Length: 108
Image 1 (cartoon, rainbow, N blue to C red):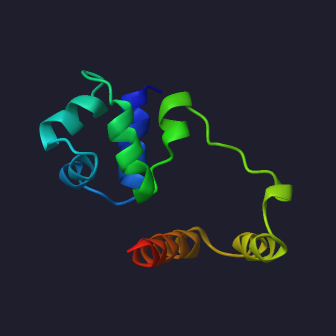
Image 2: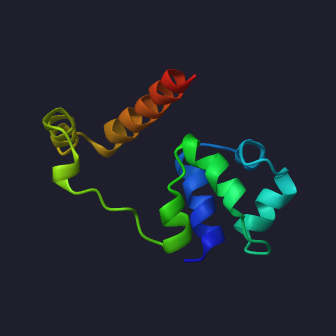
Image 3: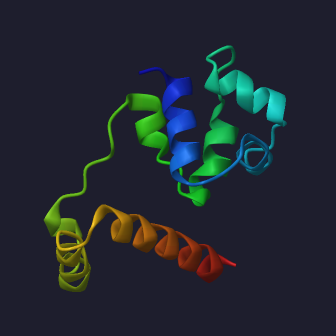
């Protein structure tokens, strides 16, 4: 998978349009399309700007998700994560979207 394909995957995962992600990164829709088609490469400023939206920049660049070891999480965080195993895929996606929205509100 290419950088552009992974960037498109992240945009889709977050439910963002090309226009919205491009604007967040300081570029237009055409540039966003070119990034996703691997006709241009996103620069560091763009990647830094889209990271707060939830884009996994490490995944976009390296092709693997940044690992988090259990010792980096609090007991509370581990407890919350343990509940995910019991949820349906639909409920997991609903929870992910809710957490993303709540985090965005908390940042503003």
